[in-house]
Length: 139
Image (cartoon, rainbow, N blue to C red):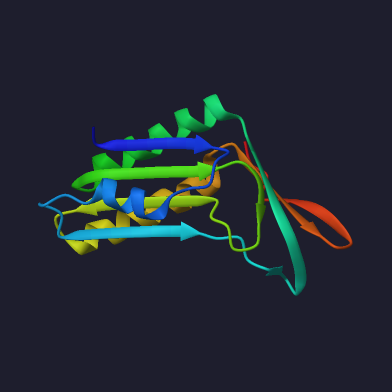
């Protein structure tokens, strides 16, 4: 299996994700870990809430993975995204890519997270003390 794609309401396990992409032939592993930060535009964030149209989101992530694999010599590619209520410091997304050389790992990882944020039907709500806002609602 070259890809591992998952949407889960359970906490994401960073070491397990990294271990899965590590292969003896991998000279480069790039990992993006998205975390819930404590402020947006000067406003304190209390928590984030993520919702997904899961069937469509998985299909879109599979499409992104296939596109990345066609552009770079990827050995393994992992995309995990969390749904539900996440506190400051928790991890909503992990992208991990292994390749023989570092440049391809960097480029592919960036492509995957940037494309995911633009096209995958996962929505984020930021909760503040004085209200809430849906952020970057797409598809």
